[in-house]
Length: 263
Image (cartoon, rainbow, N blue to C red):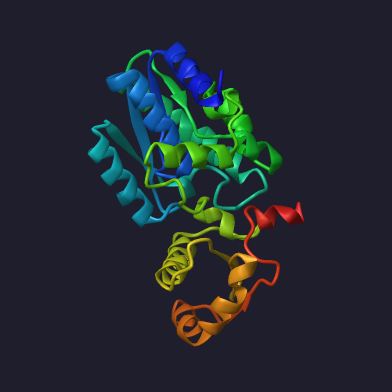
């Protein structure tokens, strides 16, 4: 049995699912397969908050409507979760424990008897992800992981299914742009969101703006370092207008979870 068939079998075994749907590569693929297999017994639950780009939420909403999939929205203020704003190394655990508890409650009311599932995949095991512990404690299932699917395979299947997200850059919540121990504020999240939108508009899809006090440290794929350097006269003034005193380019290039390297 191939991995896609295995995923379908897992989802049919659940019977009813509420997919934690962000509009990213993994959750969009999972939601598509779940809805194809289960129809109205597959719904989407999306968190709308300062931790995610508003453009990503709007894109998720548009696609779900086009597919005829019921999407429920949880309006979360993670900064109110006890301990979250202090940005400890287990920040992701704090967030997922509180957020998914709410997601489970919404799912139970909207689709009684449903199983809450998320888009964790095999590649996620290779990075520091304290949120995984929260998912296990709340009995949230990860069918992509159960089926042994990697990010590369998910992108390939997504392309076969004609999903617009098949080549979408990986996204992580905006809190991941701040070193552990640095306080996270609404203003800081808004500033980094605007900074990354500026770089997206300049043509850089895979990008992170890590915030070190008054310094904006930009990560783009190594092959694009010369290109973004050539855009400095366009980019630097715009980022400084957001309040950054210095704009730096990381010569190691784009990599997910780069701030975990300090742990």
